[in-house]
Length: 395
Image 1 (cartoon, rainbow, N blue to C red):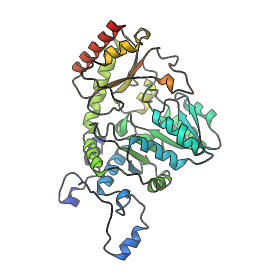
Image 2 (tube, one colour; image 1 turned 180 degrees about the horizontal axis):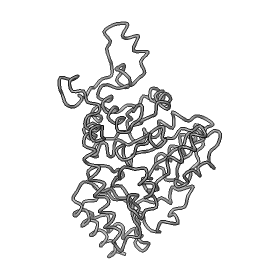
Image 3 (cartoon, rainbow, N blue to C red; image 1 turned 135 degrees about the vertical axis):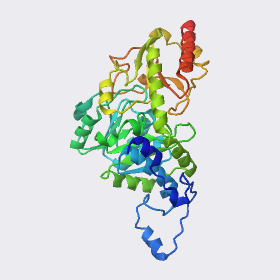
Image 4 (cartoon, helix red, strand yellow; image 1 turned 90 degrees about the vertical axis):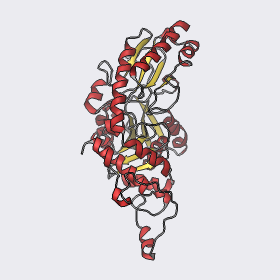
């Protein structure tokens, strides 16, 4: 089946619930067993495979896990209480004291904080690498390198990684490849077709699509699943069934929303390229972009999250405030993937440790991250135009 059909039907079993179209919300902690034999047999069942206890899942959570798994193409998917939890739990599952981890320098900031904090305290060493290194990651591999992380493109600086090349090197060294696949969603990047072992997502973003819940998911290959399943069982992480229900509603329309985001994002990006205040647009789906060839080779589409660099003369805080404080349609917020447009300034030099920012092929100036929502593009462009006019006038 095509992805649109999977998004619409996967995880549904109407006739198991009296013909109800959507799986019902099950609030449960205790699960009762009618016989002693059933109770004892439940101890042998791997959590997530059947009703044993509320934290291990009910039909509500199993339905969404099935739907996400159908789109990603992995062996099993498990839901997490947040996107960050979806990133940190795999690290706990595959790493222990004395192990070595490779992280791209473009990694999501809170994951970097987890590596520099909790993992360091656990005795795990993290090396940050140039996200554009490709097969050159071989030079960073060690005998104790147990996991290699990829995030493509990075959610601030939008470098596209050569994931198959990195995965080949990682697997040759016996390491597990873990990917943050939030930017493209399972609709536009198929991680397991490119050598990824574990795929993490913030369900908060495009799967939800409505900026009203916090959730994550982790999908694994069959070989990678047992170690992750053990960490899931021991951590006690589980999402609210009410949030799962909302996410299930979101995934049913992802195939209708994402093409709109993609097209609108490109139109806004092309318009920004024509503005005198803008030095550069960082969008992998645009032909001029440094990552376009890899995006075209590996991705099936594009999200509407991208960056643009303001010229250096527009760097002052006062000018930036003049632009941002009076935006009508572009909100300032740290998330993305919802129906609404967002715009924030970001500062990669403050967190980069392995690579210099801006890179040689990136203009110097204030980097802005924009998420193009579902509003009319003409209205968004007018709002951005007014904001850039204010920026110029205040500089």
